[in-house]
Image 1: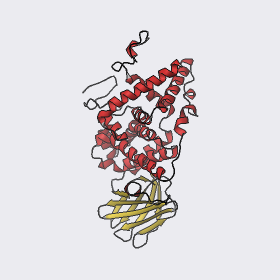
Image 2 (image 1 turned 60 degrees about the horizontal axis):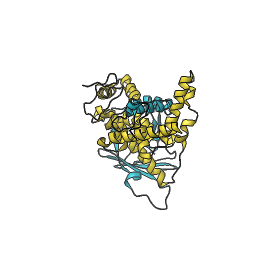
Image 3 (image 1 turned 90 degrees about the vertical axis):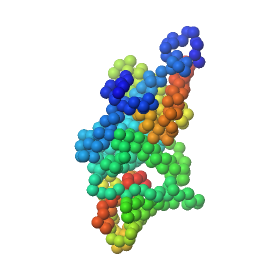
Image 4 (image 1 turned 90 degrees about the horizontal axis):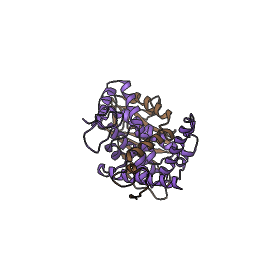
Length: 161
Length: 212
């Protein structure tokens, strides 16, 4: 592609050595800022997320996600999403379906469970004496569970159902 | 410490690392301040790094609804993990790889149900958010807006690999190659050559279009 005699801007020619990608990349940056910027409401949500920083709660890490760790079940197009979170000795198993979620706190025992949907959205769910709980509202976006069990306060890692 | 053409950069000396208007060495200090309760530090992190998160999400071509949810999930989780980040200086890479993982999960969930064709992103250049809305002041600016629109169309028409890489690179401020690597799961060493090739290809498309 190089070597065209009447190339008007030889310093911006096509030869591999002389091609200046910086300029083009900068133009792309302008294009992205004009045509596909971070939506203002999302920026706002990220600012508000600071309220989720909680030094007092332990984080229960996601240790199993059927979406990643399990083979898809043939003929079951809408198989529930199975999730396991763990913080120390505490384990929480959750199944998310189109109808809501079912869960179990382990070791079995009384617990208080809230479903969080963001910095200002917390919904308590009923838990039986063995730590089993159900919610008939499927999470409508990112969610986490806050649990109080055995003197421990735990929040599961934020996840998109 | 080196300084390139960009102002106030004192970033990593590793040659393949780039830095933008946000001083990447400041990121670690901002994270630590935010952990200590400094809301302004959190705001600075959001300002400096949310275009990167958005670019990673966009690079994976999710639907608008999925893109919004992934973006939120990433920031919620970042706030949650703030005080436990092992390398606060690399918060950008943490965000980029978390965004990537969430995007891959969404895509995996989709293929398990039905493949959805989502042309929304492609239409963007010609749809409601035209640059003309903001740049109608003069003919010169209108011409520039038109050029940007054409550039965007040619960018969208690139092959998947190039489109993905460039969409991440065009975050503002420019991401470091470590962040790009975390965002796309490609080796740092391959980013430079690939970037050069993709930009050349885009330049050729633009020139072909102008010649036509």
